[in-house]
Image (cartoon, rainbow, N blue to C red; front, side, top):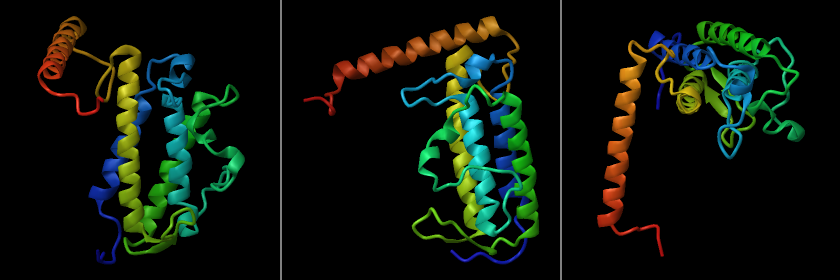
Length: 202
């Protein structure tokens, strides 16, 4: 796909910005334990998602375009650090991780503002490492949106909060609606299981 020169358009830059801020809002009102505790069998957790996104965004809009993020980070090819970006140790504070994410946004914005969409970069961990800024914008939009979805589900599991904030105009009515809707979906699933052969079964 051909990409014309020029600076990155607002439509490509603003949406990731909204997603990143929404991810941070998923931490609001939660205890230190709840932002860190594993909520899936693979250990996925809210603060770990923020840490992961901050590290990888700093790489994609940093070293990929020879504009390294000016703070120490683990190398992408350090085998001993593999997976360490997905969780926070007891020695890392929430503020350290979230504040670094904000500084990464600023560094990313500087790169995006300075370069044309067809500016070239190099991603050494990709099988086809030569890229354009356009490719990285699309990649980070996809990655950030995907992890924002993960954060939505994790926060809902913790306290039922959905959307960009934990506010609800009428929590009692909303809880009742959710319970009724969940029961309706459960009934539909059970009914489908009764009338539809299980294609995943023996």
